[in-house]
Length: 212
Image (cartoon, rainbow, N blue to C red; front, side, top):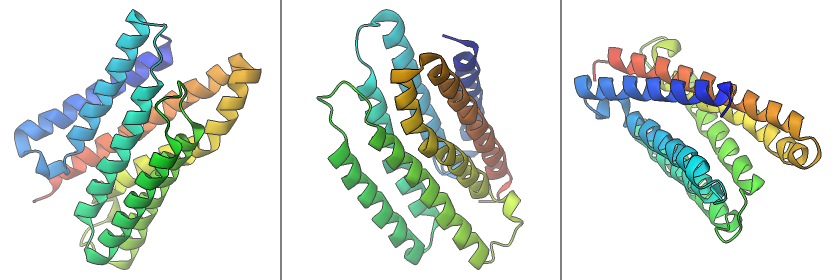
């Protein structure tokens, strides 16, 4: 476990703690159940680390496949809760399309994480935030856009998705051809994830300021 993994896990743990602290003070609905996403993410990461330390010969790709499925469902529900009917219908269509695509790509009998799943979750993470930006630009939200917590959550997902969608296939190639450069790409991905969680933390603090 290198320093980038430690930084990533520490950041996730701290932001999960912040989220649960805000839940204890303001309730879970205040942050649109984002604490659940962070808690499940931390749980998946802990499971992967424990499996890697205790059972290194056991393949863990099924964990990440299941996590990708959870993310599709969670953020599909997350965005459907914050949009009015027209935009909500678009979210439902995008989510159902993503679930169908996942079902056609994922194969739990294969001990490998299909790159197509990575592309799918990345595109999903890009489209939902872009939809929110369009909604925010065309509707009066009665506040500066940077004061809206959904701006920061959307920016976090867009930032991660934009990087990952362009790195997944090069990483697969480098894993087979140049393992040292592959490690660099993976470490960068950890740092991108750290930035994503920091942006989410800002969003959590913005939820705190909301009246409802």
